[in-house]
Image 1 (cartoon, rainbow, N blue to C red):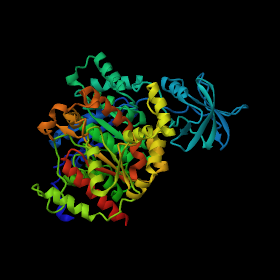
Image 2 (cartoon, rainbow, N blue to C red; image 1 turned 135 degrees about the horizontal axis):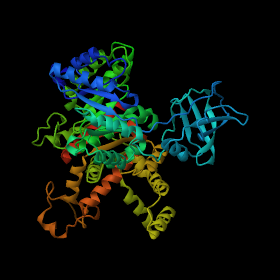
Image 3 (cartoon, rainbow, N blue to C red; image 1 turned 30 degrees about the horizontal axis):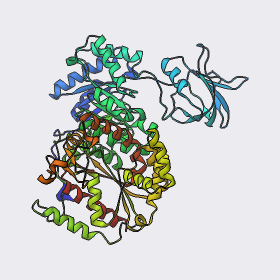
Length: 625
């Protein structure tokens, strides 16, 4: 293992930056100077707590410490965004009991606060744009969290656009002005609030202004455009604007990630809110997906925040899990490790920065060995994965493939379902054909399965015909039924199968994971620009079904005259639209198979990808036995 590790560069030689949040534990001038000396590259100011004169003094102290150290130190300002909380609580207090029915409503007057009454408990929120939108979005069955889930309600009835009845799931005493949240709920309100606009005016008026503005509650690209339009209204030229970095913290933001990235300079993977919205288990993949897509588009900086060194709020050293977390954020491709409570309110702010900087520095030196091509710009920072002995480029690949093939026990894939997933033109179909030839696995594509059902005149095939005759897409439920039936047939049970490009939607993924034991989920990672280049260069032989590429796999002269471009590859616009659909659905597909996910660099040559896939098959089967 030691022979694999690259030499660790000296202190100061770090690619990954460290961001420290300013709070009562770190706003003193002497602490700011120590934080700069410890390795802080970016200070974060949270506008939710902005008070007159405090930010101005902190900025002066930051600039002075940076100048004294001779280092470039930047500043991020976090906009608060919409805030959801209950109103004041009646002086006698309000106690919620499990099973109790309560009313949740927008307050009708200043005196309409949370209180018990003869008709039951009434919980109110102040009349604001965001609170009105929240109440309007609630549906029967929605679970509402108060104080981060310490109290929980379930909506049972709507009585008006601004009022619902709910049952108490988790009781307890209400505290005034505590947070009110509904995980997963799509709330139709502007991300840029009036307070945010006041804060932006202040930030732009600073000299020099802050370097980055982080925008909260972003759900779509138009939210970023609202901020850009407001900066235009202030007369701020594009060349003098801080970089805009949305906080990716809601499921809708991941669904609309492409439109958000188009408007952004950088972004923040806000894991605290994401964990609340997606569930803790959904955060790791969301982090990897967001970073990869952001870096593939060239965004900088891409930051990761929340609980990276959480235990150092009270302890002088981090846990091993936290060290691994920081390293993995670096391996994922993040540019900045953002410390929050560790430096804002912790007992060891300087030690937290030192620890994070040391972890990042070591991870920087080793990142080229981890998931090559993941989280980096196409064509840069690529590192080849070492192939087995004999893979020297002159016939070595074939030797590696033979060795891998021989190492796979006969019948090892019996009954196994292996999903091969990737964007359009990722080469997944070719890989399936190669594995089919090498190991006898059944290669199944959804299109072929459905066409077979229609040809055989089955009941399911007849249902498909009904959809097609209307010009409608075949439903997820029907598609899943057809695929499930095919996976239970004798040849699959005997030989195992490769499921090519299925599931295609989150609903299909949920159904497949619930009804079929998927052995592994192989995801070929290919940046969008590479996909487009490959797709526009592909030609299909309608006689043999063989696919050629004008640059990488030129066709023989005798077939050139009959080659044609596939409809899906006819233009760049069509390919981009297919990519948008793929990326939008992938975020809801992969979490169902996260414990068996294999990520492979699909930008390598076809033979190299084949060798990597075969190695992953051997390794997993060997571990399982």
